[in-house]
Image 1 (spheres, one colour):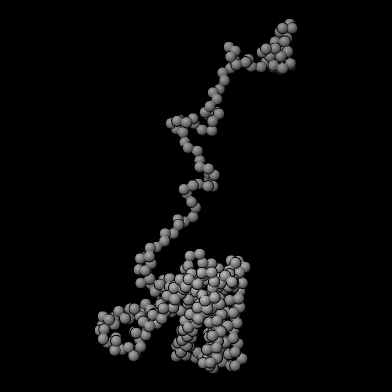
Image 2 (spheres, rainbow, N blue to C red):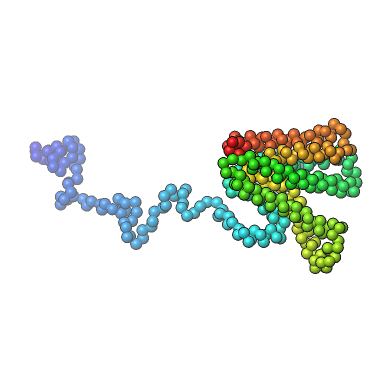
Length: 327
C-alpha cells in the first residue's frame, strides 16, 4: 500500500503532488504523449525561410510609414529656361511676373508683409476713387476717362520717380557696405537694374506705336512693319501696366539685393511723391483740409508699414540695416 500510495497519490515517479491527480509521464516514456513540433505554425510568426508560399513581412512602420509611397501630390517639375522664355513671349503678364518679382535664392519672403502691402495698395486706390467721387471729379463718361488717365499718369510718375531714386538709394547702400559686400550687392543689383530697363523699354515701344512724332517711322516700314509694331505694342502695354503695379509693390525687386532695401526705398519714394503732389498742385478741386490729409496719409501709412516690416525682419529673421552693412 505504501508503494501504491506513494506512486498514485504521494508524488511518486508518475504521480502529481500530494492529493493531486496523475501527472503525464516524462518525455521518452513509452506512454508519453507526442510533443508538438517547435516551429511553424506554432513557434514562428511566418513560414520558414524558403517556404514556397511565404510572404514578406510589412515594411517598418506599416501602415503609417511606407517607403516609396509618399502622401500628397507628386513634386512639381521645374520648367526649362527655354520653355519659360517661350511662355513669356505669348503671355506678357507672366513675363512681367518673371521680370518684376524678386527671385533670389534664399530670399526671406514674409507672407504677412506681402498681404499687408497688397491691402495698403487696394485701400489706397479705393480711398482715391472715393475722394474723386465725393468731390464731383467724376460726373460723366468723359470724366471717368479723364480720372483714369490721371491715375495712370500718377502711377507712371511714381515709376519715373522710383527710377530716379533707385540708383541714389542703392548706390548709397552699396557704398556703405563693408567686408567685401560691395561686390556681392553690385552683382545682385543686375536684376533690379534689368527690371528698370525693361520698364523703360516697354514704355518706349508704346511710344513707337502711338506717338505722332514717330508717324514717319511707321510709314517707312510699310504694312507688315505696322502689324509687327501693333502686336509688340499690345504686348508691351500689358507688360507695362502689370509691371507698374508689381514695381510699386516689390519696389523694382530690390529685395534681390537685400531684404531691408524695399521698405527703405518705399519710404523715400512715397515722401518724394507727396512733395511732387504739393509742387504740382494735385487735387485742386478737393478742400484744403481733405487735400492735406489725403496727401500726407499715403506717406505716413507707408512709413509706418516700412517701420513695421523692418521690425518684423529684425524679430523673426535677424535682418537689420546694421547687419546688412556689417557695421
